[in-house]
Length: 311
Ligand SMILES: Nc1nc2c(ncn2[C@@H]2O[C@H](COP(=O)(O)OP(=O)(O)OP(=O)(O)O)[C@@H](O)[C@H]2O)c(=O)[nH]1
Ligand SMILES: [Mg+2]
Image (cartoon, rainbow, N blue to C red; front, side, top):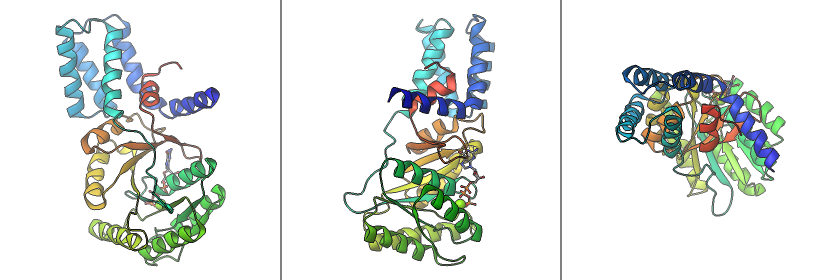
């Protein structure tokens, strides 16, 4: 068990290597020399936090709080500062757990939304693998009927994850596919039904209308569904992700976030910003393209990984 946790921790750590190199490296340089906390130091710290996409508002808040702590003698040297930063960021992230909400009875319906290329389809495949690994039965609905390639991509992923796929042809009514998937999951007594959606349509209004319709149609079958609406955000989108999240939250009643591609970016801090500005919990993070590269979001592991702590 401890070994498994250790392995998981290592994966998250590897995935966040770039963010760590950015923040951790810069901080060590800043602090290592036993520097005084002066104007230049604060400027460098500000640059470091902004580069990791902690966000302007949060960075200002951290610096103001740091100055106050310094004046009051709570923070005097580098190690204090590090502890202070970790605690501030961790508290920000630890508001609630990352478990998926479950249906009281029948299948739990998870709708996965997000802009084109964010990682929705990949996340569904990873989630299916993870849930089947926990002994759950899963069915996937290919609700992205906009692109033919999307249905084929999902068919390959579903086969690899060993789960059933409900699909239709390109251009078919996405809501009808979602309805059929939920009906099939009910008929088979599945624990979860994961529904993929399109990330791009003719325009944004069209996309939002289709997603709303999809929701309404699912509710005809199960009034309490979807039990989770996960918004997938590309972690490399940095502060743009915040804007996307706002649009989807308003239109779709998003209940949680998945932040992907954190292996390929120094901007892991966007997870902190989105959490803060939208009040939405980060449920999972994507740290690679493989089936096992989706991890439940763990604030402690995330902060430790960013700062390069030892296990
Ligand atoms: N490095 C890395 N790549 C990822 C991650 N998640 C997804 N990707 C890659 O991002 C690309 C887009 O992923 P998709 O899952 O197809 O994205 P999507 O949101 O379904 O895209 P559309 O269907 O076009 O809207 C693929 O090449 C994935 O392999 C991740 O956590 N890390
Ligand atoms: Mg897709």
